Image (cartoon, rainbow, N blue to C red):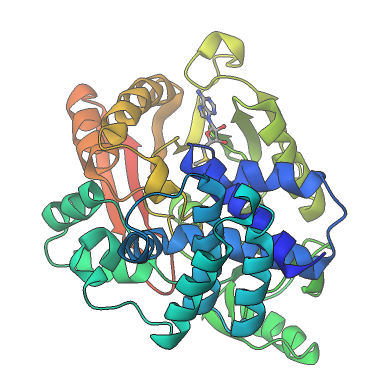
Length: 417
Ligand SMILES: C[S@@+](CC[C@H](N)C(=O)[O-])C[C@H]1O[C@@H](n2cnc3c(N)ncnc32)[C@H](O)[C@@H]1O
């Protein structure tokens, strides 16, 4: 398939996300529509993620050069995709421009071909850098919506700038090494034998120098390693499962933390998720790890669907959240969320946490976890929960902020007394 057709496909993806669709869902549909070669698919993914990651800057530049919106939205999306290639990738400039102009000839009867050509050539003349005037707009400068920037400034007056900077980087690929098989040091040596450069970042964690597909990872299919962000790896470590314990993983899919808990100890684990299709991914994950768990598709907030009345030693409450901490990995989230979403989600979490707390035995513990950095879902949620439950004692609280090594996560470990 020509680069022009791939650019058009990525433009279509961009428009669907701009209309409110989740990028991952859109890409899943696109993948099923055609037999993409690995290279074509890699390009579509890069163009789709990249144009969301830098959407603020790309839009700012587009409006500078084309102040009036074009009659065909796909033309604008095509420009965004091609501008992304010129400004943020090493793609051959002339191929990017020529193919985009070719692709534009198929839209709006080719009326805007010369405009597309002129804008893209202007980008090249400006050495593919954003003019200073564009950077006066905070959305273009930081690649976040204005309301989000304002929030970060008030919630994290000292760290907001680092959070914003880190959020623009593509995420690192971190692996969790199954401690039932080997240490991170030992796996590093295995990677070296396959000429894969990496470094040890924890006793059981390795970070690759360059991201690669899991099919290239030695012993992945045997369950020796799993892909999991370093921040996400802290959940099971904090829960600290012990042999023989009865554990509930209340919102388990796709099963990253489920697998980690099972690697750490021989436990009796029940993994719930309300979404049966997503729960299938938990099944695949633990099958690959060859570790046992009970899986059930059920609403964790409604006990009568799944609870037999026997309380748990430990509950992992990795509750649904705005995912504001993982925008490096899911850049569309920055543009899909609305200002009040954290409050709405916090209400759902509140109900679920109260129900789950009733399933923890006295002397047991619950780990409240989110991949958000908004306090309504985290510290404020914890404080409200502690004030509602006299038998809850906070043992530990951690807000991990996104940086070049990890995504943003929140953890609160609560003991039942
Ligand atoms: C943050 S994700 C969990 C990530 C998972 N713990 C992991 O490490 O791979 C939240 C999950 O909660 C599930 N969920 C949402 N509402 C739920 C409910 N009422 N009961 C159970 N699961 C729910 C979603 O389907 C989603 O899979």
